[in-house]
Every structure is written in C-alpha cells, then in structure tokens.
Length: 266
Length: 365
Image (tube, rainbow over all chains, first blue to last red; front, side):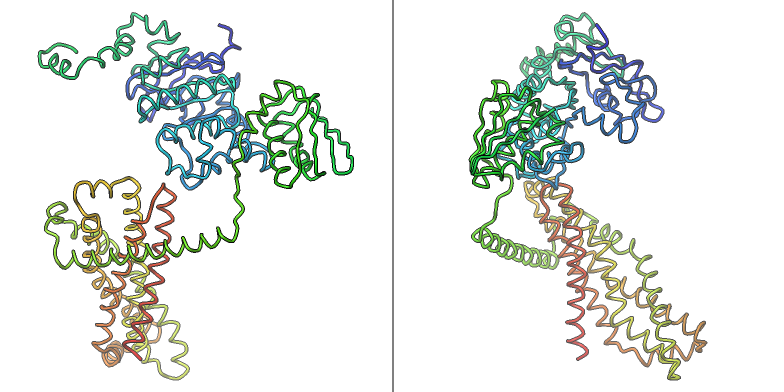
C-alpha cells in the first residue's frame, strides 16, 4: 500500500496514563476515503487511540502522521488551523448546552473562516438539512433526543468539510433502528463529501454495515488490522470470539443461562 | 479565481460569474456578492462560465438569493451547468428563516408568556414554602428512614463548616466599624461610645446580615447547584418514581439544618464582631476593659439579641427556599446550573436585605 493513500499513519504509538501504559506499539494505516472501525472490548484503549491521534491524549512514544503532517510537530495557531481539517464526533456529541444548534454550528465557521455571517447561516442550515435536523435549528442540545444529538454532533464534525472525521462510539445508547439510520447517514455523507471515517465502536451490526477496514484492539495491542472480510475469516481466537458474539447473542436467554448452570460455555 | 462582471439596465442588473467559487473565493468576495442583492428590481445571475462551485460557494449564492428575496429583488439564475445546478439545488431547498422578525403581536405574546411564567414560578415557590414548612413541622418519618442522619450531615456542611469564615469576617467587620467610628468619636471626646456603637451595630445589623450574605454565597449557591444538577441528571425524577417527594427528601433536611445552625452562627458572629471592636477599643483607643464591658452592657438590650436571632432564622429560610426553588427550575445542561446558582445568590441577598429593612421598620420605628 502506498503511503500517499493513507490519511493516517501511526508508528510505534504508545500512550500511558501515569505509569500505566494503555496502548503499546500501535502501527496503523488508515486508507483515504475508507471507513475504518476501531473495535474491541471495553477498556481495551479504543477511545484513547482515537483521542491520541489528534493529541487530545498525549502520546508516550512513537509518531502520528495525519495527511502527511506530523501531529507532534504542530503547535499553536498551526495546530488549530490543521485541526479544522479534521472533524471529531464525541460520544455525547460535545455540543455546548447553552447554545442552540444554529449557534453551535456557527462556531467552527466563525473560528476558522472569514465568511460573511449570511453565508455562514446558509452553510449551517445546509449542514443541519444534511443530517435531517432543519426543524431543530433553534433548539438547545438538551431538547434533542439521543439520535438527534448524535446527528447534530456529526453535523458539527463535518461543518468545514474535513478530509477526516473521527467518531467515538456513534451508536452508543441508540436503539438498533436509530443506530442503523445514523450509519446510513454517515455513509451517505462520507460519499457526498469524500471524507475518510475512523469510527470507534463495539457494535457488531454497525461494524458490518459501515466498515471497509477493521482495527481490533485487545488490552492495548493491535490484535487484527485489515479488511472486514479478513476479520470475519480471521483464525485468531480473540478476533473470532469478538465477531462470533452476534451468533451467541441471538440464542435465547433461557438457553444461555441453562448452559451456564450446566457448566458449559455459552 | 472568481470574476464578477456587472451590467445594469434601468431596474435590471446582469451579473456574470466565471472561474471558480469555492471556499477561498467565498471568504474573500462573499460580502461583494451579497451586495449585488440591492442593485435593482431584477437580478440576473449568469452562471454559465462558472467552472467549479463547492458548498461554500453554493452557500454564497443561496445567501444572495435569500437577501434578494428579502429586499424585494427578483433573482434569476441562468445558464448553470449540471454540476453547479446540482450543488445549488441542495442549498436552495427551503425557506426557513434564521432570524424571525418580531412584530407587535409577537412582542405582546412574549410579555404575556413572561408574565405567566413568573406567575407559575411564584405558585411553585409558594408550594415549596408550604411543603417545606408542613413536612418540617409535621415530621417525615419516611424521609428519616430513607435519609437517616441527613439533618446532622447538612448541619455540619451548612453550619459547622462555615463557622470559621463567618467568625473571621465578623471579627474583621467589628474591627473596621470600631476603627472607622473611633476617629469621629474622639473629636467629641466620646471614645467610650465605641462600645455602644459596636454592640448595637453588630447585634442589630451586621452580624445577622453579614452571616446571611455569607451563607447565601456559600451554602445557598451549593444548595441551588446541587438541586439543579440533580434535576438535570434526572435524580429528582428518580426520587418521584420511587414515591419520594423531592421537597421532603432533599429540601426539608437542608431547611431543618439551616434553621438550627444559622442562629448559632449569628451568635458566634456577634461575639467575634464585638470582640474585634473590643480589641480596637482596648489596644488602639486605650479604653479600659471594664469600662468597655460596662458600657456595652448598658447599651445592649435583650430585644437586640432576640431580634438578631429572629432575623437570622428568617434569613436562613429565605436562603434555602430561594436556592431550592431556583434549583428545581434548572433544565437543559451545565449552563443552566451556573445560571440558577448565580440567580439564587443574587435573589437571596436581595430578599435578605429587603427582610432586614422590614425588620428595622417593625422593631425600631
């Protein structure tokens, strides 16, 4: 794979909280224009990896290059300008609760462009229309449902038409139908805007719907990195166990409990 | 690069756009484009030579269209390529206005809504007051089972933890009042009257009022923020679904605690304030200890002490009722917590001073 096809490259990335190293020797290649899902069990370091890519969590060693730019070499205004080319969608949307959606979405335009206010308002309305939230223009984030909040968060993430969008657990807390709708929306806008998506999730259905590539973490190490098809066919027991969850979760609860009582693995 | 060519015929203006209209051009020439809206009654925008438009460029044309419509100008888009038209169609999708111009009816409606909201707030406040008093007096066996030791815990938080700062502030106020009055009293050879001054001012006004202001800023803010956060995090709803009345569970222990501790704090404030004045009188004004104490005992009446304690209890109730009321009004997010906390402190201090004025009218006029 050529380096210029990759929008994100990490080399020997390690992250620590104090003395405790939570990510070890992460070497990632995120393909431009693709959807890459970072998955794994709870506490394996998925969100930490996502945050460390753009410096929200400082790294202990190694390097991160996004669009060819060494992220550690960026400081001050240059860093701020560069980050405007990357969108970040937080698990809880990360919108300012005191501001309406209109004002929330105005922020990136006012901070990073010299556009006239009237043009900014058109762009904000367009972004909200893209995520089917035109009717919620004047609502506060606290007045939105979970699904609407996620869509609003995504609208802010794509406000400046970034080349890369990082999303932390977009389907967390959503019902399956709303989660599927959000996935479809993200895929549609990814194609429309030509963005690359890196999504942290442990929702198997979501991974199968959106992922081109999968990075699987286990206890801070990359267990698998490659295509979704490769992950599904992977012989590694850990990866198999993760992707086989769906089959076991479809069994009846009664059966599962009965198997546990019988001392059998479910 | 964007080129703008303009031709004008009477009430009609023809604008030819060529080149590219993307983010850089929208930023650099957006204002110039928007100014085209006021050029005539008909604005023909020829887009045939426009090679590239991104969403920023399309937003610029959409903003121009909206502005033209608002100023009664007819905008015609002509000759756009399929690509440009596709971009524009996504923008010229609706007529939702960002800012709604308010008419007289809207203003009157706003006033009416505001009045009704204040009325509802007053009603809720009166309910809170009656519920708190009722359940505090009538006892709340069920609450006591659920929150055993709550009154003691709240008393420590509200009263005991504030003792240090209340005493320190009262002491400083006492010294300042004594120092300020010393120079004037000396002019009249009435140094000894500093004992009367400090005794009366501390017991009647300074001690209860300064304690109330401190408690409004410290404990009142804490109560408002706590209840607001509980409200936002649906803890209050959680209590209701368990069949517990939030006022009984959350407010009554605080009400009892502040009712018990505030008079105690005020007594300490009285002592510390008078002690501050005593220090100034003895060390700075060189008055005799026995002379100061004798003058003080002559100046002070039991009525002053009792009024001070009565005031402190009323101030305590004002603080806890307003803080709880504001806390229950919080909704939305973190911003709301800050807003109701500020509002609670300001309103508590204001109403404590109003109550103080009423007390002065009742007891001393």
